[in-house]
Image (cartoon, rainbow, N blue to C red; front, side, top):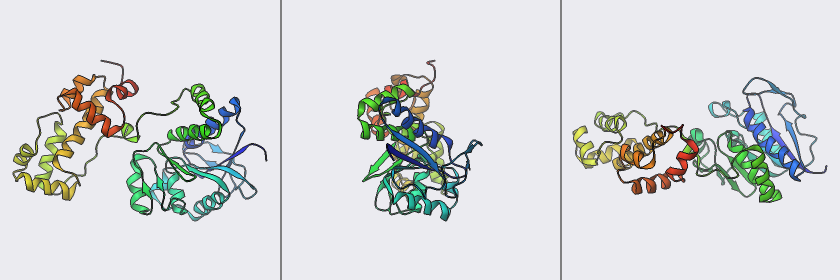
Length: 318
């Protein structure tokens, strides 16, 4: 078969954007000199119901496909909450054995993991499920902040739209940056998105501490991250010594009090930037004080400068 065979493995409940996003990239690349041939297969060889309702036709179960240049395993919400069924796991393993490169989009990483295809490799998935993947499959080196990860012919990507980022990277690898740039321009997407998943993540979600003293300290920070919090001031609120407070934070939350304060302020700063505040205002309101300190801390945590984050993600300026 001429051209580059891209085979999507889909199933009932598959995220439609996990499929349509990368497929659009490959199809658009054909307008710029590429020769991708996109097909869809399912474990049973029958059409599947997508996450948004409509049926997605398929080209069988893939048993008749002799060569797969790129296998794309799409994701779906149910892959996280319940075991990957044997038919899907076995289909992924069978197709991967004939594929030049194997990729997944979002929670499709759970299918690759169940098939043993990520053991001993670096991989990523949606930031919300990275910890679950790491806990369920300890042989995988999960990279929770990556948009996509490549490890010796196996590629995994993060949230649903990151499948587009990964597909653009594959087009660039196959046909060079000029073709990939033309595709990105035609689809009006980033050639390479700045930063990592953390810039898109939801606010810090801290489990409710079991110890009343720790709970009092945590609630004080969460109620007003921009206040003049110190380890000593939180210890006074909790009515324990600073050393004991440090032990409580380490035991229940796995961070020091100072680190917890910093993380809370970083999340508050994202909300302020999202609402249109400038960098100087955000530094003051979130408790960093100095814009320089804020810029340095924000960039280290999220991989993108706060000014750049604001340009990309803020609401209309106030």
